[in-house]
Structures are given as C-alpha cells and as structure tokens.
Length: 187
Image 1 (cartoon, helix red, strand yellow):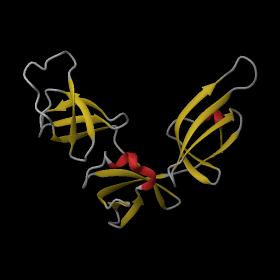
Image 2: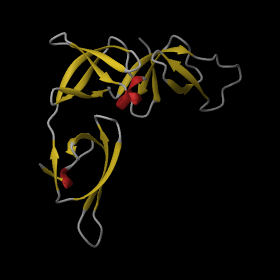
Image 3: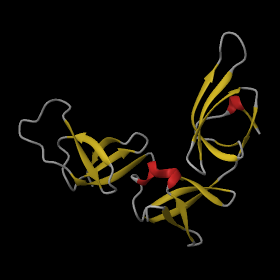
C-alpha cells in the first residue's frame, strides 16, 4: 500500500479489482482544504480508461510486476504472438487492449513484456525506434518552403509526417509516444 500522493506516472496499481497503469497524474494543492491527486488510469486487462480523484493521504494498493524480454513473432489480428527468450515458450497477448502499440512493433524485435500474476498485461515499446520508409511521394521541384512536410508510411504501416527530403528506402527515427518524426538515420 502506498499513499495516493506518492503515485507517479508509469506505476502499476490495483484498483477496483483490476490492474491499472497510471497514464497521467496531476497533484493539486488548493488554497483551502486538503491536497488531492487526479489520475488517469488504463485498465491492463480490457484497455478501458478510468479517471480517479483521491485525497493525497488515501491508501492505494500498488502491484509488483516483472519485466520479461520477449521476441515479437507476429500478429494475427486477434493476438500478438511472443516467445519468451529464456524458456522459448510462446504465448499470446490480446490485441484488443493494445491497438495503439501494433503500429510500433516490428516482427522479430525484442520487447519488454510486463507480467503480473503470471499473465502478460502490457508491452513496453522503446521511446524511440528506427523504421524504414516503405512509401514516400517524391518532392516536387520548387517545394522548398520552410518547414514543408509530407506524409510517408513506414514498414509497420505507421503514417508519419516528415520533411519533404525523406525518400523511400531511407531510415528514420520516430518518437513512439507521439508518433512524430525525430530525425533521418544514416546507417
């Protein structure tokens, strides 16, 4: 048990008989009355979002989770298929609660899978990932206005707004939190 005032973004809590990830946290200390915390929680079983307000001195049950390095094999539309890199056991994670992560995962890559109560409940995507551009329109001559951009598609199907000089076959770095272009990668 921890005090609500000690909750941070990214923590795992057990609220209303389900595991939740703290997606957002706002601490409020009004001039009159006691301090409180506004939380936006993501249910790790069904993907629903819960907004909670708690007094900072209220007790909340935190849960301990384990990170396992697992290789992402493929998605069949219903589930993500992974292989535990220590035991070589294969398992599935339902896509339903994690649709937002599908466009950031590449087949064969290793990701950290969050396990709670011996069940996989979340996938950690690295903050920045390198992708190959698979579709990009050619820039037209004279299209050099400052900050000119275009929409391209990367190998996972993710669409990203990039500067017009990016071409098909190049590699780019993408921020997975925002889905935004960071820089061209020369490798």
